[in-house]
Structures are given as C-alpha cells and as structure tokens.
Length: 207
Length: 208
Image (tube, rainbow over all chains, first blue to last red; front, side, top):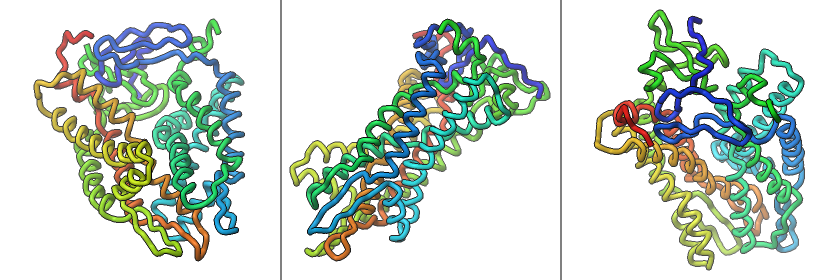
C-alpha cells in the first residue's frame, strides 16, 4: 500500500493523457484535450432524485415479472408468458445455455443493478459509508455492460410482430411495465456511477 | 504528458490517479476503491486475440445451425439466422429484416473485424490516426450488446409458443452458439486496452 491518490489529477481512459481536475457544474462534462473522450462528469440529478427513479424502476421490474408480457390465443387455447416462464421453458426443453444467458442478461444483472444502486444511493443519502460500499460499487460497474433490458425490450417488440402472424396476440400488463422500465433504466444508466466515488461536497454542492 | 510517463497509474474502476509502486511491482491497489491497478490492462492483446478467435470459431455454427425450430400441424421448419431474415423480407416486413440483419450479421462481423484490426495496429505503427482508431474502439464497445437481440427473440418465442399439438417453437443449437459469439466478442472488446493505440500512434503534441 505505497500508492497515494493524486486527488487533483485525472487521466484519460482512452489515451492516458493527464489533466488537472476541475470542479464542474451539474450536467457538465470534462473532455480529454487530446482525444475528446469524456473524462468525468457531474450528474445533473442529485442522489435523492436518483433514489426516487431507482425505486420507481424496482416497482416496474416487479410488475414486469409478475404479469404476462404477451397473451397468446390460438384455436381456443390461451397462453400467457412471463420472462421467467420463458426461461424455465427453455431450460426444461434442453436449451440450458440459452436459458442461462437470457436469465443472466435480462433478469439477474438488471435486478442486481437496481438493488445495488438503491443501496448505494441510500448509503449516500444517510451520509454513511458502509464497508461494503466500495466492493458493491466496483461490482456494479463491472456488471453494468452485461445487463441488457433495452435489448430485451426490442426483442419483445420483434417477437410481438412475429407472433402476430401465428396467433392472436394481446399485450399484457408486463409489456407496459417493461416500456416504463426501459425508459427509467435509460435515465439510471446515463447517471455516471463514478460520481459516487467522489467526496460528498463535489457531488452535491450548490445543488 | 500521459500518466504512465509521469509514473502514475489510473484505476480503471474509479478513475483515481495512483502513484506507481515504489518497490517496482507492476500492479498497485487503488487507495480509494481497492481494485488492482495495472499500468495497462493485463495481457490485453493476448486476451483480446483469444476471445476473438473463440468468437470467430463459434460464428460458424451460429450461422450454419438452426436457431429456431417451429412445429405445427403443417410440418416442422427450421430457421437459421439468415433464413429468418429472408422470411421477414419475403413476408412484407423489410424494416424488421434490415434490423435483424444489422444486429445479427453486420454488427458481429464488423465488430470482430474491427477488433482484429485494432489488436494488430496496437502492436505496430501503421500510419493510422490514433483519433480514428480510438473512435473505432468506442464504437465497437457501444454496439456489441445489440447483437443479443436474436437470442432474446428466439428465447421469448420458444417460451411463449407452446400450444402442444398445434404449434410449438423450440430454440435450436444455433441460438446458443450465437449467444456465445456475442458474449465472447464483448469479452474481447473489454480486454482490449485503447491506451495501447496511443502509446504507439499518438504524437506527443497531439491536440484536437
């Protein structure tokens, strides 16, 4: 542990150029002078606002998973499908790798993302920094690229069109919940997690 | 001046700039977040190539094997990725055909090709502009995930169309192979360290 943080410096993740850190206004971003990559940004939304959005997203997630996404009707037989139901059907049909991939990218990682965000923002809100803060934030950053709710959303729409040629398809409650979840997640994912590492005064000052 | 030349290391997790280890060890522990900090991503090019070759190998069964098997009263049909695109095109949804063709064929191939070029150019000077190469890398990281679309579509169809004797849809072995291509190429893009491009192509006075 001989390293010391050079708190006033920022290095570009793309080209490694060193810069002197400046305090930004909310919504501003600092770009690399050499290659133009975003170095760091000051989120427009405060942590308490993010907490509300994450809570809403968690509710949408629960709705999206308890109600059917699509209701299919063909020759008098009605089929209701949920995301986890589809995963279970794949698994029992002997397609374990596909089932596992869908489960992890469309369910496990997104739910972990939301719960971890909730806990981290709650910790910031209460002004405490539990021992798990750093490992949790680090894991969240590493997992984030693997959560693919927005791709799943597009997949739902494509299968809706595909299925409408085979059977009567009615959109389920979960479809609307998924649309809401996709919009909320777009806001959540645009919040730069690295801002959570910053000391409090740089994150919330002049809010 | 770059961080490496100044004897500094940037933590990729929290972006803290740390001092290099006084004892001369390669990696240090980030004082803020506790992640291991390397001067450059460890074995970046070897890992990129390994994942990339694995992805290229999986790309063959992903395109040859059926991704979806549809059984109905009128018989059984198997669809590969390409025949699925052709079906959409023929059945009057050219927009969807183009969308699926883009995410399932164009993006994976362009991504693998781009990564192979980047991994080659990172090692030796090529006269290419580092700005262009850097943009290519960020583009590759951005679009890769959308290739998962076809896997999700097959999974949802297989999960929903279960009408016993009337019609069933099953996922084929191609779906698993295609999912593996997406995962492996995302790992390849993740292992590549763009700073290597600037180490070899950047001019010291490079300003935008």
